[in-house]
Length: 99
Image 1 (tube, rainbow, N blue to C red):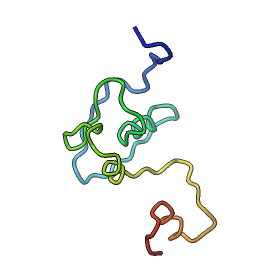
Image 2: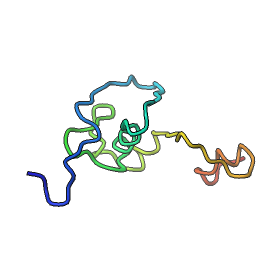
Image 3: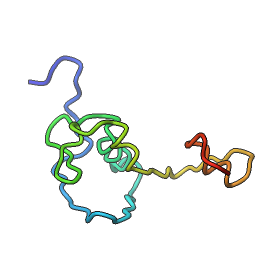
């Protein structure tokens, strides 16, 4: 029986894959297919309701958030750039990086 106020709709179900270390991966698909949900589970924006997400064989819930998120990059479909140089846009999320 689901807890009160908890949805029983699953965004992702029966998903399993392995990505070799050092590999760059692009997650593509139709709107609503679970791309953002997948990345949010990997970087622990949300925790899994069932199952687990492993990085290097370690459950992401055991990683420190800083260490985990420093290893993950995400590029959104709708890219927003400030009216500044390309270098300033790239360095925006990393204060103190020389431009």
